[in-house]
Image 1 (cartoon, rainbow, N blue to C red):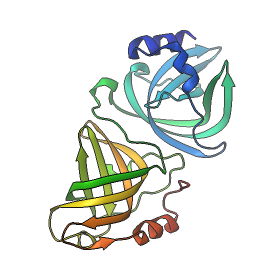
Image 2 (image 1 turned 90 degrees about the vertical axis):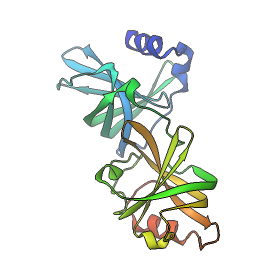
Image 3 (image 1 turned 120 degrees about the vertical axis):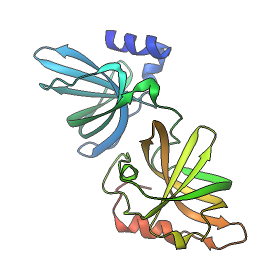
Length: 233
């Protein structure tokens, strides 16, 4: 447990919180999430122990040696889940395959993610700014990840340290204005990091624009039916 002691000393978390870890995804399914990583040695294998922002524990064994797995750096990982196991009351998600993409020093990443896949979001009187989409928009996480919607535009909503991103095929579906106020009701569909900040991808079930049109759940139902993102809502 020495690796966990190092983890919790650095993050000032009590060891009893080890038991708060939950299983991620489904066995034989795919997972993508942001984590910080520690490397240890188990026999002739490298043992990578990871925790995401929710303190969920993920484990991966490999012959491969990954650099900067010192608990100070932040990675986007994608992997196949081989097992859910529980050791001394701690739930661990075990990966059979895993790819690591270095993001930055963990403490350089600002802000917070909101919720988990499928959670409801309500943003009353939200000031949304419409921008052109960029490639980073499509590196979102999910317990089952496929392709994000191919979007020409996106709406950015900032609430304190939290940033929300809404993908849209056309600016005309919203309003001709670049910035407007909306009441937004949506579902969480993933997370991403952009310009050193955590952001939450959401897709609307209903949007009400002040002095403008109302968009109902047809947008969300069409997106879900497309199968382009495999989360179970």
